[in-house]
Amino acid sequence: MKTKVGVVSLGCDKNRVDTEVMLANLQAGGYEITPDPSSADVIIVNTCAFLEAARKEAIETVLEMARYKTGNCKKIIVTGCLGQKFGKEIFDDLTEADAVAGAYEYDRICEIVEQTLNGSRRLYNSCENGLTSGTRILTTAKHVAYLKIADGCNNFCTYCLIPHIRGRYRSVPTEELVRQTRDLAQKGVKELILVAQDTTRYGMDLYGEPRLTELIAQLSQIEGIEWIRLLYCYPELMTDKLLNEIVSNPKTVNYVDIPLQHVNDGILRKMNRRSDGRSQRELFDKLNKLNIDVRSTFICGFPGETEQTVDEMEEFLRRYKLRNVGFFAYSREEGTPAYNFDGQVPSRTKQKYVNRMYKTQYEIVQERNRAEIGKTHKCIVDEFDNFDGEYYFYKGRTYFMTPEIDGNVYIASRRQLTVGEFCNVRINGALEYDLSGEATE
Image (cartoon, rainbow, N blue to C red; front, side, top):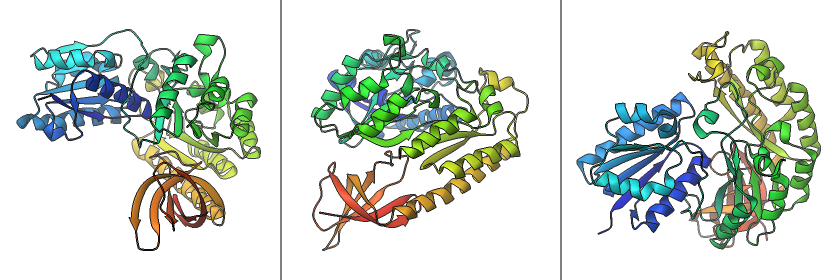
């Protein structure tokens, strides 16, 4: 009988790609992959360590998985960012883990599993900042895949640990990304989501200049890929060249994730962000004229935050009416410059600011969704729901909906649709963050 391995993936979609490569490596090594941890001989927890909350979740997940040691599970292995940044601490203190590995050990995962099953308890933590690549077992729907175009970060925002965990920015060569995309398209992927810590910086280290526009143009030529979606685009590198590619390329959706984090000049400087309030507003004026929708993220309660700076953030939201926004209370991370900044904001106040911003954004989303009623949108069908004798019901998304983090379109259709196909949907209802409509011929 084959050894069964179960994998729990935590954190961001970039971590998901690492997990998918690890799953393929395990399968190629002769291990059986199981989604059921209770039947696994070995459980691997691929972790995030970006914030204190993520580290807490990772440790709690390891403790939860360790309960299966009373059954089939023989070993627990911790991989990923937690092992990369805090490997020794986790190895010494978290005795439930039988091995701890960093974020660049996925190509050795079969060796690690074998040695751990043979009784070795080791810390595997290479200091080399490699790039995860290779065949993947998709954990998304088969018609959607993330493409990690780079790893690491050079921005050194004062609140962020990522450069200290993942190292300096490293782009994946264009020819390798084209090869990976062809492979994904052959497997049925139609929606490709480009991710990195800073997607817009792609190619700077390899080619001496940003090459995201050129990469998009090449990937869009691959048969089978119908939607290309861009996440984590920093505002200072959203050039006219890139904007023109987005609006002129029929495969690039007019929806971009731009993590602003704030709009107040003083706070942006303290964050070590490269943009300021004026340049952000100039960019968003262009985006509105080009009909490019935006999702973004903001940090509330950064050191020095006041009611006035929150007012400025709210004014920006009401002026530009972003399609989707996530708000996060500032997390004070030891080892970052902001940890020692004056003007630390109490936790209760930070959460008050988060709640206020979500309330404002909710009103904006309601307004924007109501405005969609009567329009017809191209949608991708994600899953079948039910059939009532007259209509088939599905869950799907349109261009301004990123999988799992944005809303959905609930589709009624008189004809049977196929998961992964595109169809036109006339919107007839707004449901908080979601829409509903009927497929048209």
